[in-house]
Image (tube, helix red, strand yellow):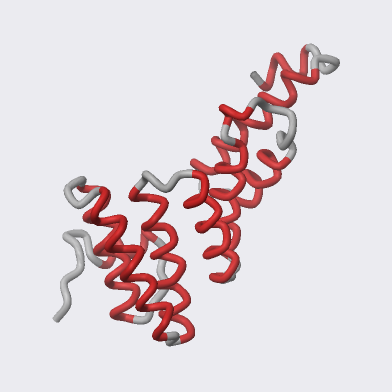
Length: 164
């Protein structure tokens, strides 16, 4: 796609599709800032079924998390929930943002909201290995008042975390 875009620069659609796919590549490499830039450049230029607003908000979540802007994380997560309220991941993302706010500000209302959204996520998916892992990760975040990345959690707790 990149090569085709360079070979025929006058074809705007190839540039747009290249940016769109580069956005996914950047998300996969945990480069949310670059992904956000790529996806934003596609806004208004791709059909609705490309779900560009969903992916822009996915990238915003990563950017906000990396900057420790947990209110921004919450805002982007709620936007994703508006787009897809059938996914456990959407509810878990909002729960995660509230857990970060609770962990860093000791805001009891954020803790309550985190558990409420976690319950909704659990109602949709309580059995998949990924869901069980993520819920465990969020419970640790709230219990320990620590915001760590997934990789660090796995490193510290390769078999999952248990409350002592």
